[in-house]
Image: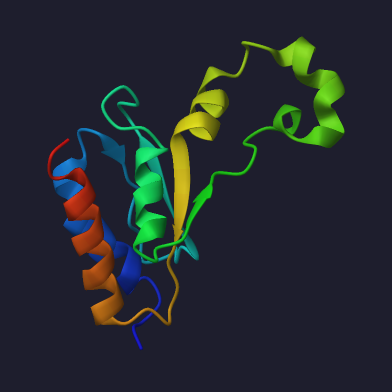
Length: 124
């Protein structure tokens, strides 16, 4: 078993070479991600749909939940009022995703995650 936080630094180190197309979370010893967030910087180069290939390789991918209340059904009455006023939140919703990352991932699990990302991204 790995110490909390080791998984996210390992993933960051292995994905750093893709920092021109992926925005990775900032590593901090004070934060332990239970879901590792990734934001696609260049959606014309790499789509979130393409990253669903991770799931075919047994790495669960989840969309970033609605970043602002207007993206939640309960607040749909506010959408028109805020339409176009929160571009960063809209961007994250369309181009962000999470993969699981927790204290029970083994070194082998982390190497597998890095390997699969490399296979998907090597020709991008």
